[in-house]
Structures are given as C-alpha cells and as structure tokens.
Image (spheres, one colour):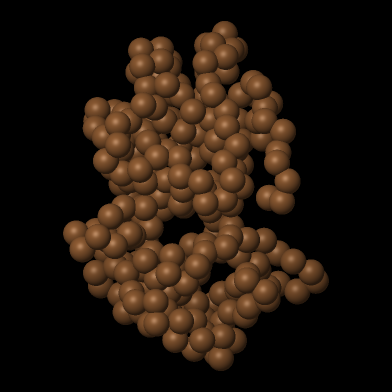
Length: 240
C-alpha cells in the first residue's frame, strides 16, 4: 500500500470481517469486542512482536501482509507463514499460555487489530462461534504444518520451489491484462523465499533462473508472474 488506509472503528466495517474469528457472533458481543480492540497501522518492516517475548494478546490482520518467522538452532531465521487479511496471529501462544513462539513483521504497510490477552480469554472465548472458528483455524494450521514438514524433508529443490510458487499464486495471485499470466502480488526477497523452502539463497536464485528459462515463470520489475501452472504442478508433485 502506498498510502495510509483509513482504520475501521467497528469490526463490521472491516473488509475482512466475514473472514475473521468474530464473523458468526451476535451484535451485542461484537459491539463489545469492537470497543475493546486496538487498531494500528504498521509500516513495511515494522515488527509487531519478537519470539520469546511475553504474549500480551493476539492480532487480526485487516489488510496487508505479516511475515511470521522463527529462529533455528543455528541462529538463522526461517519464515513459517505469511499472514494476510482475515488471518489471526499469536493464537496458539495465548491458548497454551506461552511466550510468543514466533516473530511477526509487516511485509508491506498493514492495518492490524490487537486484542488484549485477558479480555480475549475471559470474554471472547465465552462466545461459542469464536471457539468453533478457533478449532477450525488450528486444525488447518496443523494440516498445513504437517504438509510443509513433509515437503521440506522429502522433496528436491525444484519440487519445493514449484510448490512455493503455486502456494503464493493461490494466496496472492492476481490476473493482469488480457493474458492468463498471474502476478504474485507479494514482494519477498530471495533470502526470504530461500528460508521458506529451506535452501541456500544461491540455490534458490539458480532454480528461479531455470524456471524462467523454461517459461514457467517470468519477472517484471520486482514481481514474479506464473506462466505455466500445468508444468509447475507436475514439478511440485503434490500428494494432497
């Protein structure tokens, strides 16, 4: 986003309300939640919280993209997810009463709502629809984590990169112009992409170059474009 967005005062005014944890609750508790949230604008590169720090609450993304990362045993940083509009951050840590187990940083200018931990656990969790939505989200997180671990341990570089590009296409793909080429509407550095599939930056760059030469992807400016989904699907060798 190039300009600062207007921050919605009520949850129902948010464009991502129907994808939020609170989309199925009644008007009265929703009014209470709306009055209790704190909505902030985070510029690209701003850190929301660091791994290992006290968990004071959770975050709901209204707009923008938030990079979720975790430190490895050798001190390097691995991206484990990218939260976007309607996603919740910090939920597992609150439920398990832990410190934040990851770090969160804005990949682009973002609007994010914060919900105090005590308010969330004593008030919001009394709403049955919220609990059902939490269970659904945690189930999907477990499923995605299991698939990611399997992919990282069993697939070669070309398979991993093809799977990453398809995943980015699914979440951030945007058709431009008259053709069917799909823009990946998210800016990730080569270091960040390499960390997401567990390879060296140099290896990622070489494989990206191979994919461009083969006509699987192209690049305009800083953005990647998907050109041959069929071939990428073959390379990705998806089992689920």
